[in-house]
Amino acid sequence: MLRTLSRVSELPLIVKQLQKNAAQAGVAKTNNYATEATVQVNRPFKLHRLDEGPATEVKLTKDEALKYYTQMQTIRRIETAAGNLYKEKIIRGFCHLYSGQEACAVGMKAAMRDVDNIISAYRVHGWTYLMGVSPIGVLAELTGAQSGCARGKGGSMHMYAPNFFGGNGIVGAQVPLGTGVGLACKYKGNGGMCLALYGDGAANQGQVFEAYNMAYLWKLPVIFVCENNNYGMGTSSERASCNTDYYTRGDALPGIWVDGMDVLAVRSATEFAINYVNTVGPLVMETNTYRYSGHSMSDPGTSYRTREEIQEVRQKRDPITSFKELCIELGLITTDEVKAIDLKVRKEIDEATAFAKSDAELAVSHLWTDVSSNNLEPKLRGTNSFNLDHIQERKGVNH
Image (cartoon, rainbow, N blue to C red; front, side):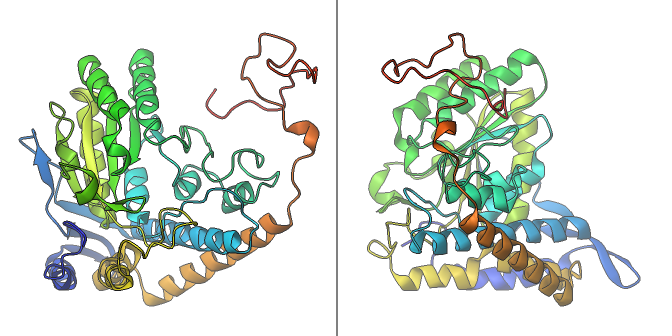
């Protein structure tokens, strides 16, 4: 069963806490409609080597409520479309869905500034959208079409956008890379930082601890984010890790545990962490969350957990439903506005899906273009028998 996320005795309290929060929240109104509210986060933060933590009482405006709900709903729809396209065999290869974890990405993105960066593993369709790629750009990349954000060359695990250093297919490899992005921020003196995301399965990789050590010694502006969805592939965290308090595993690095199903808690924790890493040094943040689908599309996700467990989380801890109910209770969003958003998002994703299914693939001659960002030789290395010239058609987004 889920550790700390869905103990049966705890779950019914969430709805009561939600109602209590709404009743006690301070609400500013204009013409009987709420424009801003003060909200208590659902579950308290846990701290490691920190005397003070993130704010537990946060402000939420109407515009923010509409934005976060739209973003989470869009990610959910993109992932549903991706799952269907995979089942139709239009998407090939690996495909890892983010359904259930939307509050993590949306909460972190809400706290990021223009100078901040993010790098993650291979569950990144939602992050790609949040960092500026349209749903068409995401879904067309998944189908291998030329309108994809990487022209169909990257697929599910290799999408990029400005300040987004992509999905990475090697387990844990993005953590030292993110540490390097943090080093670049410090070297440039631009005040930026990097979110280096990884899962509870990757948390046992040796390179993660090497990155912790270097970041601490050099005081790099890096937030190491363990998105703990409680299962590394098909293995529960308790069976894989001797210490499942991932926020404490940085040893000398301070850490924060945050409810990853609460978008406002994630935003608050990330705001705190950004300030900390830019003034003190690196920090580990664990977002406790849950994925509804299997590890990948080849995993039914029910051989190591029960269908009842998944359904229970969907009913009582879903990040989108919980946030929607909170916003309606506070008067920040009306049911009509929710319906309008749902219809708009559904239409946008349906149209993007249809486009991605019909869009053409790149011509074969384009497959070996843009191999190097700054090619120093006229011919591509390792292709002597083919005698291929290096051709640059477009610059990488982060060069």
